[in-house]
Image (cartoon, rainbow, N blue to C red; front, top):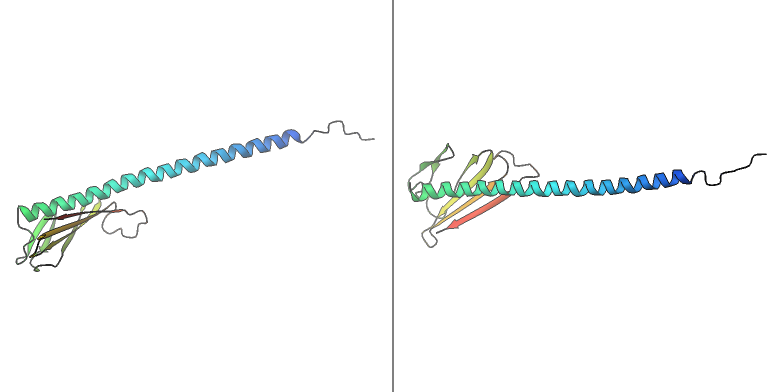
Length: 150
């Protein structure tokens, strides 16, 4: 009594589901690539911020060392970097690092100056970070360093 006149009745629905699945997979792949590109570009930007912070620390230490004798091995003094005054720098003798930190536009710079009696007589190591100095647990924190010896 009941005759099935259309044997291909569900074929259109199957094709529609397959096409939708393929388009969804392509869309997710493009989204994944876009997210990775975004993370890569922001990592490059953060690396530059960290490098500039390290460079600022190096320049500040070089200025105070060469122009103001701010890291004397016998007399403690104060240095000012980016309107931050750090007192008690120097006066601790040879081969002992004198370390201070300051922030440049919200980016941390930690500087260590070591004086020696042998060549090279002065070593300045500056580490720059793309975060402020208190934010040490940030998983996206990037460190860049510069070392100057003379």
